[in-house]
Length: 336
Image 1 (spheres, rainbow, N blue to C red):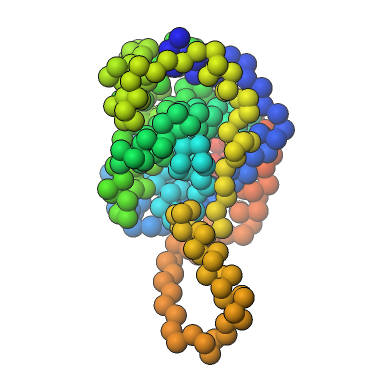
Image 2: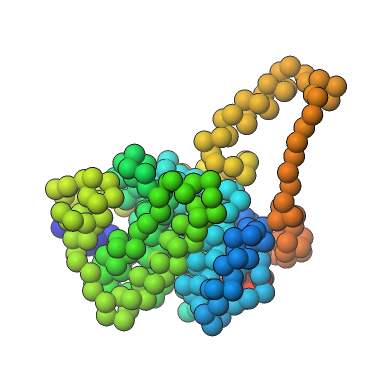
């Protein structure tokens, strides 16, 4: 059984979603959408905005513009990752929500999907990227790849394909196409290209699903074949998957276990222990202002509120009741 077939059967079957996974999904959606408005005011988004202007009705969070679904996914992906506020996961050793949420929101808005369908698509998208991450994320890091984008494009494609109503054959092609779109080298960490990795991941997820909808085909063994995704990106060759792997999907969802970590600080999660240690050091030693010779602080204008308090409160309320939305277009309009 091909890995793409296993994923497709799960996505296009009738997976169940209990109250815990729904709540945790909404928590992650709220968290990342909270990061997007500030990120939308950064230089990299402003620099790319004139280029990604394909007409369409999909929202750019924090901006007045509307563009095509894949352009919206691309730019919202950058916005969500640019300030390093988005959640993390030990499953894919990266940022699960921001890699897939922009594609799900864009296609959901394009198709006037219900909040319930968008929520399901997001859960499925994160499950695909995290389960593939469990297989290869450590090796992706070792080989110099950006694990968030390499695993995320499969999840973004899966979520988009679900909202497009794909059957298992189209979904298999979507995943195979997405495998050829995976990219992102760690050498670009520390530059604005790092957040572009995530934007490309989300936008390519939409494109992969759209291509499959147009009849573009992909090899069923694109993920684990001799010259496929797992070998070329992570060095795995000759691996096979069957019922044992299939039974791990949704049992439990990675959103529930090991779960996603919500950040306390706007920096790479690997720095958080040091920040915690510094905070504890200050507290334990009762450091006062007189003990400190100088403090240097940089604050970007993008850190200031963008949407306004009333909009933020309404957006939070509606996101936490996402299943009640009949058509997410009005919800997305709040984000402009």
